[in-house]
Each structure stands twice: as structure tokens, then as C-alpha cells.
Image 1: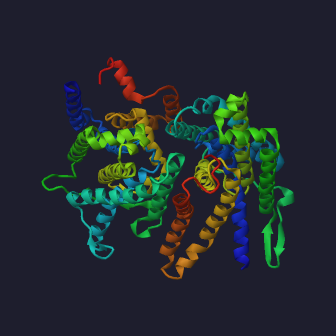
Image 2: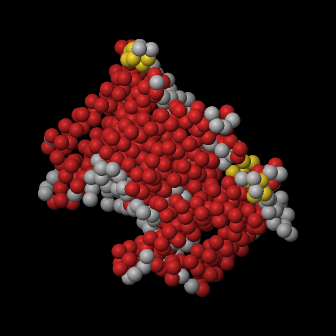
Image 3: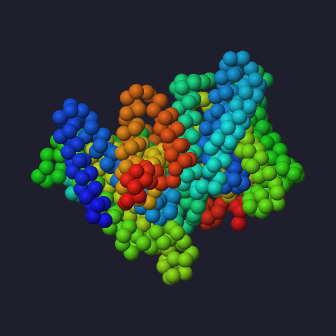
Length: 324
Length: 304
């Protein structure tokens, strides 16, 4: 337990030093790369909570990621135009308002999708979550006011009082802070009795039901919490890239999030972050050499799925001698 | 009225295409219990092989043969190389491995054929149109596609209900372990069913190739609609795939044809257009959600 905290602290400090390293070596793209990987890591970690701990294979997680992002985009759009959303909600560019709003709206969306989807199971659950995500995708494509297929440009990152958010390094540290806080939140969550119940449902739902636990309700709570996490990361992503587009909720994005979880290690805390970092780094590195980077990524993914159980986390554990 | 009839026929043609894809997918799922996201890639393989051969030789029929052979071979390779190891795994691994296959198939196709779409023409004898109603000429080729789809449906019905292989397929869909325990060569059956599914997907690709633009990613678009068909029809049920395929094909085509114009009567033009297109794309997913809420296992679920 102690050793784990030391490793976490070291990793956190190293990540905090990334902007300095980027400046020192002149590789200014590093900050952007690591920042995006951290945000994807948060999204993957939120998916991992229902996928890895809860055993719910949601193929529509990108929908909540996109909804969170669009909340930021739409609020900025109205702030910029001086109009009001639905005629009475004024826009804003204050992060202290946009982020909670994004989390709330994503949670509401997850509540609706989850309440309906969780009535099914197995392959039907995979497909109905995919179907709902597609509905969100096409809904946002059809909203011409908010850019349709082109999405919304957010010309300036949301403001946080006392911080210069135009500064790339500051923005990066804000993202890192959120990622670290989310990691600690998830660690607390899976150790809580709620997390234990969720894990119990994955292992044997019938037994949990027999113990008098209303499994549907607990699964729904987990689904909503997970959607809220995805909404938070989507909102951060739109702030980070200053752009919200329907591509954020394309079904291949849901697939990518699943890939990150599997690559890093299902049902582990650090796995999704490691998977997101690995996939994102790999993609950007390969994209520099060839436009056909998807081919090696596909082959690698196939090999990982076919040969290993537990992803990169299992590998790391093996290399460090089985210690956690 | 004539426009409506024409769109109904277009919907029927799209519906049989969906059926050709969904029949293979639902059999593969019903018997092997594996989710194959890469089924759309086999459709793409069929379309590309057929178009390429048709462009090289100038013969649609040569292309048809090439498309069928290529997709069946691709299917067998995928089954032997990848799928075979996934039968015992959970759905998550299957989704990811076949997601990886999509990436591999798509990028390989880009490497071989580039990003430019291929265009082929319909075969000579079907190039005209038929006067099916007074004032309504309809392209012969589309009628041919409908006929092929219906013929395959009849053929599959006999194959599944009247032959020994079909008996094993039905038994496999009901209880895999029992079929294996009774000494049936289940591996051979799996490969055969997968090849048949790939062949049907390839046939759908070949049939669509003169109508749609043959390009990378064409399989991704249609595979989602196919999954909707499979799930609504009931996983493992070919009958369900047929009914759901036809109904959804028509439903989707009708929405796309008439919803934007209807919305334009109540809202300004460009916004109505965008909203109409978006809402009609949502239609089939909405339908699937509704069906699953009433019948969580689909309309004609084969497995208990």
C-alpha cells in the first residue's frame, strides 16, 4: 500500500515536470500530447469502472464524453453570441460553471440511457448502448445551430479565477490536477462498499440479488457515475483542444476507449491511464512516419487481445515481481 | 403516390441487402456465440474484389465470381486465424479482436486500392429500366438485387430446414455443447457456417457495388445497421433477420425520403434539411431501443 503511494507520487511529479521538459528540449508538442493522453485516460478509467469492475460492456461510452464536451461548447457559443440556451440559460466561459454543468448533463444522459439499457443484458446490452450513442451522434450532427458536422470552435479556453488559462502549461497542470483527483476518487470508490457491491454483481449477479441487493439500481448508479466521469473528461478535452465535434461521440471513439481499457488492463486503477498513454503515444508516433498507422495499431491490438490476459498492467506486475 | 411506391421498392432493395448481411451474422452469432464486428469488412472485400475484376475484365459476372470467392476465402482465413480462438472468450475480447480486424482490413484496402472510390456499371442486360406501373420506370438492376435477395432467403430456408447441415445448424443454435457431445465435427461446422456468412456478406457487397460508391469504410456504415437488424430480429434467427431486415430497410428509406421535406413545412429550409437527415439516421436505432424494451431478446429469439 505504501509502495503504491510512493509510485503514484513519483509518477505525478514526473508528469508535472512535463511542460518544463518540453520547453527544455524544444519539443513543445509533448505537453499537448501528454495532456490529451491524461484526458483520454480519465475517460477510459470512467468506462473501466462499469466495464472492468461492473462487468457491463458499454459500447456507447463516447456519447457521454461528447455530451460533456458539447456542454462546454454550447455554453461558450451562447456566451460568445450573447444569446441564451433555450431562451433562458445564458452562456458562460467560467470553468467553475461549465465543468459541473457538463458532469450534470452527462449524468442525466447516462441515467436515461442506463435506465433503459440495463433492462437487457449480454449482446443486447452492448448493442443498445451502441444504438443510444449513435442517436446522440446523429442528433448533434443535425443541430445546424451548433455547427452540425463541423462542430463548435471554442475560441478561448474557459477561465478559472486567478489562473492564466491561455498559458499552455497552466492548462496542462489543471488537466493533470483533475486527472489525479479523478484517480484518487476512483480508488476510493472501488474500495467503498458501493464498489464492492458492483464487483460482486459482476462476479455473480444472482447471488447478490439473493442477498437482498437491488442489482438493477446499483448497476444504474454505477452507470451514471461512469457517464459523469466521461462527461468531465469530454469537457476538459474541449477546453484543451478548444473544439467540440460530433467525432467525439462516433462509435469508433467508443471502441477506442475500450481498446485503451483492455490495452492497459481491465479492472485495474492505473490500467486505463497506461492504456490511453500507450495507445495515444503509439498513434502519434506512427502517424509521423506513415498515414497507415491504423494497420500496425490493429495488428498490435489483435495480438494483445489474442495472447494476453490483463494487458500492460499484467506485464508490469510480472516485470516488477508480482508486487502491486 | 408513385414516389411512395418507388421509395418502397428502394427500401425493399436496401432491406434484402441488410438481410444478406444479417443472415450470416445471426448464424455466426447463434451457433458460435461470437460477435463479429468485422462482418462489414467482408462485405467490403466482396465489393472491392468484384469492382476491381469488373473494371479489369469489363465483365460484371467475372466480378461477381471474384467477389464471392474473395469474401469466402477472407472469411475462412479469419475463422481459422482469429475467430477459432475467440469462441471460448467473453464478448469483450470478441468485440475488441474484431474491432482490430476492421482496422486491419480497412488499412490493407487503403494500401492496395487507395482512398479513391471505385465505380462500376451495372451489367448490360440489367442496364435498362422496367415500366412496373404506368408512369413509374424502375431500374432493372435494382429489381435484380431484390430477386437475388429473395432467392437467397428461399435457399437459406431450404438449407436450414430441409438438409442435414441445416439440422446441425439449428441444433447448434439451440445447444452447442449438446451437438459437440453427440460427436459432430463442430470445428468443421463452424468453419463452414463462417464461410457461408462471409459468402453472403460478399454477395451483398457485390450486389451493392454498382449502386453505392465502393470505398474504404463502406462496411462500417452498414455493419451498424446490420447489427440493429440482428438484434431486433432475435440473435440466431434467420427468419428474424429476414423480417427485421425488410422492415428496417423500408423504414430507414422512407424516413430519409420523406422526413426532411415534411420538416421543411414547419421550419426554415437548411435547418429542416439537417435535422431531417439527422433524425432519419436515428430512426433505426430508436426502433431497436423500443423493440428491446418490449422484448429484451428481440422478436424471434432462437436461444432460450
